[in-house]
Image (cartoon, rainbow, N blue to C red; front, side, top):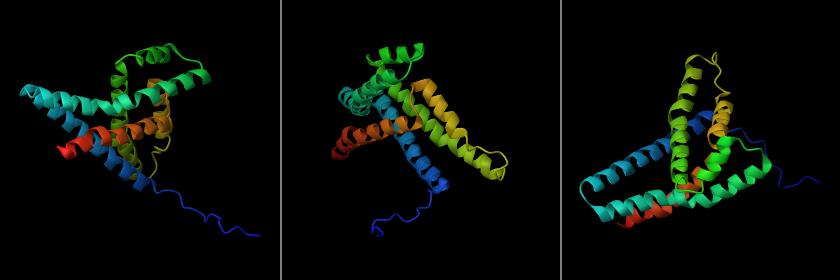
Length: 178
């Protein structure tokens, strides 16, 4: 008896649509980060201590929300694989306030890859009519993420989603009310 819930054959996602959508979202995140830093500097320069402090708190809060899940992730990862000296250093550093710098660096590198490297690879592939194959760039970037952060691309995307959702709560909503 045929099931009524049989899946139809789904077409794979259009890589150009996915690239464009990711590029748009990461460009918005980049300009948001630049704007936040610029505003904080201006508030500090003009002596608005209360607004500066509130802005620093609301900008850094999403990174602190990622703190516990990151520690849990690192703990589970260390059980599954052998750690290098660099990863041991990162685990120890994550117990300090350097975790914010670590997560900020992860954000910056991911934004640079999404806004500059991936579109450039796609443009090179288009301009050379596929002669220069750039499809394995994702695998190379995954190795880069593994070396720098001990995470895969999917892990970093998960932490970025968590940060984005908490950013909406801690940064965007208070700005709307102000």
